[in-house]
Amino acid sequence: MIQIADAATMGGIQLMLDDTAGQAVASDGTLPHIGCGLVDVTSYNADAGLVNLQIYP
Amino acid sequence: MSAPNRWGSDIGTGTPAQSIYEASTTQKHRIGTRLKIGERTFYYGEAVASCSPAEICSPDQSLLGSSLGLLEDGNCVALAAGTAFSDQPAITAALAVGDTWLAVTHADRLDNVTKNLLVDGYVVLTDSANADYQQIYKIKRNSAMSSDIVAIELYDPIVTATTDGTTGISLMMNPWKKMRPADSTVDEQPGGVPLVEIAASSFGWFQTWGPSMIQVDAGHEACGGLQLMLSTTAGQADASNGTLSVIGDGLVDCTTAGADAALVKLRLYP
View 1 (tube, each protein chain N blue to C red):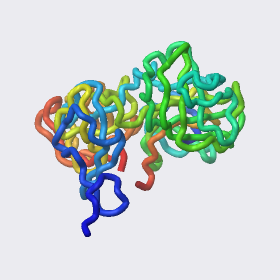
View 2: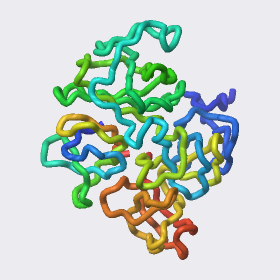
View 3: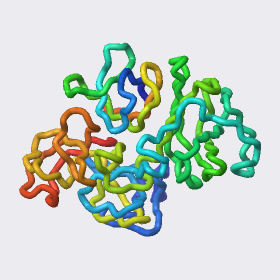
């Protein structure tokens, strides 16, 4: 799980670091890849979403 | 004395009861069993629709009532002891440290949840009022939906008490449960690629990591060296635009997209 900054519809979305410490944001393809969202969340900026982490296997 | 050749044994080496080139109508391993062969990784899964070789497949999320697998805040409920299982204790809406059961409710999103559909899946408990309350657990068993309620038993006890009313819930099946060809519009959890056809209700190995093959959608024949994502055509891949989930990287171009399978390096579950 990862706290999501601004992507409530994160299911199926590639994620990267946000400028809020500890949170992830939908990737624009520039920053390092963190993982992929599995399930959308209801609200963001604190809620944690289910993700498939892909940092170090 | 020779070591027992028993899958999962902690002495000796396990041998899978089913080849990576075989589909079976009989389940021979637990869903989610991992098989490592050199640089390739496979997980054992169950198909809910026919999964052809080189098709990217995903759990059928419609079984959780939507493409979201989402329940909103305040969907934990109390349930009297013995309601869902004879050995199920009384469940409270607000969960206490040490609890291993929870009950979730929704008017329609749980309608297709059958007994043990969620086994070895995951639940996230999230509370936007308190960032320290985020929790994830693996699911041991679940009841079928009854009166809009599903009871869930966890493998591990709750480590942080929850607050009824502000706790949100996300659910997902095991990543290799009820597999079907995936597309970018519905199935958001790409889980693996079979090497042979796995018919509906059959079982087999889905490759998740390492050199493999994927059918490539039209227009993306030159996929060598490109990052790949789900396409709008079920089971096929498109060149990534950097946003959708990463499936892997193309290694070699193919000639005819939409039918040919390209050599790829899968990067789903290592």
